Length: 244
Length: 222
Image 1 (spheres, chains in turn orange, green):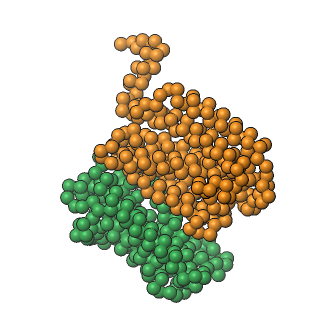
Image 2 (tube, helix red, strand yellow; image 1 turned 120 degrees about the vertical axis):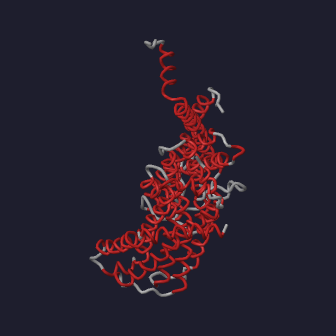
Image 3 (cartoon, chains in turn cyan, yellow; image 1 turned 120 degrees about the horizontal axis):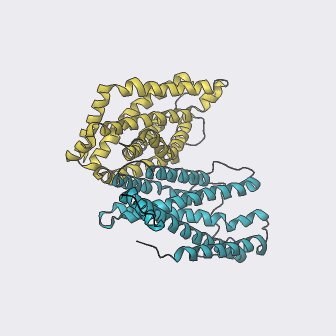
């Protein structure tokens, strides 16, 4: 399962272009809102990174399930699960950081023990545990299976996190966008800014995911084929002859 | 499955009974945690009574970690895990048995700790039905999640540090719900605690089901 070479530069350039468009739109084209003033501009960043974190963990869970299922078991699924979880953790941390930056002026605190915030912090902790489990010194099959099961347990927190604002009375507001009625809660100009943010985030996520996946592949190859071959290849590249 | 579960639970409890680790180490540790909390909050005795529910469940959680660690260590020694696989027992039964044994130890420990908070923290436990229901459901959930994570970390060189990292975030909702339900029972919190008991029931059902389905996959490895 190799990803064509051209995909990463294309995704990277796309992420930069859409990121720039989202920044211009978010900083200059949309105006401040009546309730939250300038702080509402963070809508371009915060909801996209949060949703992409869910997506990343979702990919990890599906890939883990495919690894555990005997008919579809392939090492690649495990590598994809690991790569996606790593990028997901970055996006989840960004969610907490951007939320905190917004929370300080609007709520008056950096952090509060609100159901949504707590569930997101737990999600981060769960996937940090998952990544720790992936790094344990153990046999490949043991490690792959155990981390796949851990990913399936951790993903149970995603629906809890998502529906936290509906199930409990939270300080965190409910969903900003109703997919069936996009203009129900927010203005069209904000919807466009949000969409740009989503596309930029999605492209950046795909770019990072593919890069991480390739690194995981190389690491796996290094593990199976060993140091010797890697050294030989490097020597061959540099044209160094090994004295016999 | 149930017969296998009873066999495994019986085996684990017999080992614990003979080794006396639960009575000589885990139970004193749990009481020690209660005493340390008292030292930490000593300046204001009212705080201890108010926070009794939370401190009680933190103590249960810490002791639960030890019990789970023990339960998985039994299988890691002397290739017991392989023998368990060779025995032909149903993996779901093995999971339920091991979780059952952990739950039995935890329940005994919880009775001891409850006596501890009544004596040391001057807490008065009202609503006995709510307390019993909370403890049964929280213990089932903790034992199920603990057994599952215990077997994820079992046999690894880094298991002592890995298990708390994996289990504590998972147990956080359980700690929250059990504390809230106990606060309702202790009268330090308004409400009847029903919603928290429901949450505990959902937690226990999810982890028991997950364990029954996934334990076979964890045993088959290597």
